[in-house]
Length: 81
Image (cartoon, rainbow, N blue to C red; front, side):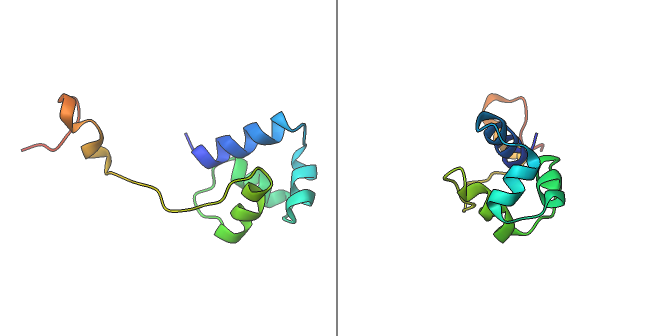
């Protein structure tokens, strides 16, 4: 699951916008919107922010832990050793 792509697609639908309308409002191309919603791994951050700002959001730093540490406390996943 790609959180940004899911967020943008859901917000677009909530606001009753087509991909074409969202692209126009954000000032980006239709191809960019399609790639964003499909979860393309490499996109320009400035353009992503143009889209997110329509919904009151922006990219920023977030906490991250390697997958091996995510469930280390409960014993299901964790460092092997």
